[in-house]
Image (cartoon, rainbow, N blue to C red; front, top):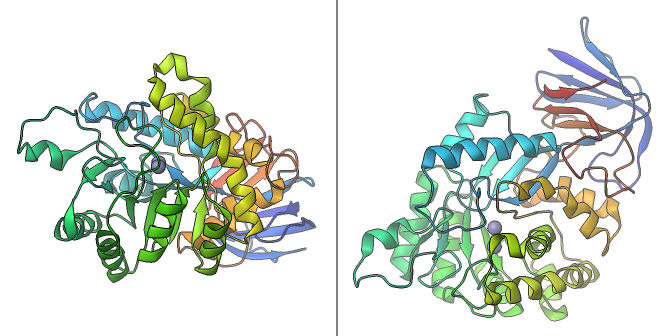
Length: 409
Ligand code: ZN
Ligand code: ZN
């Protein structure tokens, strides 16, 4: 099965400039050749891009596909309902051009399998399983009033995270998530905005616990992703060997310089706090939560500028919660445009994310040998940040792994 895209302007995921008049040959789900005139085998399907821009499928490196509600406390929905809504959320992501997403807590190996076997038309899923949180941490959504020794509840934790305290428990939790099919480990290393009890400024997990978790991930040949807002939490995560810092809104210059030197990635997530601010009344956030959400929102753009100046490798994520709020996924591009060139955001959402996820050369690039995740779009997404907003109306072709999800050409 072969497909040839002709007459395209190619954004290859790495270079800032488009290459005109190019062709891309896809054979058996893999990009075989990128050149002015690839030699296509007999019977190849030919798609004339008519000078439109061809890009790699987008990658969102911070999602929660089971986050059907902005209220993450567990035990409020039937699992069957949550997973059915997850399917709806994932189909929406693919419609918006995201062919791979990295789930930072909640999605399980069953969803990965359902996508791989074609039961869900969604993006390729790279998952953490449940995130690890300390007691009283960002992932501890339990009611405050628990009977002493209510261990069962503490083990179940919330829908996106599990509670683990102390060296032996964090090791066990990390090993258990990897055993269940996690591709990497997610931890909560600082307070959060959407959670009620923990101030943003607090540090979560001790250096010893963080190091133990990183050691387990590395033993499995993978890495740790850490939710962290403040310089103090980011520094602790870097000390322990964490690979990717999520949010990082309150980052300062010395921390950014250190991050850059240690080759640690930053994944800003601007749209989540931006949208939650707009929908605050609808979801009835407490004044305390709103104060925290506004605080990180206001610092997000500044954080990106600081990180860019320091040469930090910046990925692309969204972190949206709530079934209808996922529609704003592409708005991350328009928000990032206030702090950087749109082409740099696009590079973040393709090759940088791929490299960060240890999938360099396989996704996020238009190059021979990469999986055939390909978009053809109306407009120039290297200069226009609105191309990928809404529900994919500007995308003519969405190909994932060589199969068409959409083809208007
Ligand atoms: Zn987070
Ligand atoms: Zn998150």
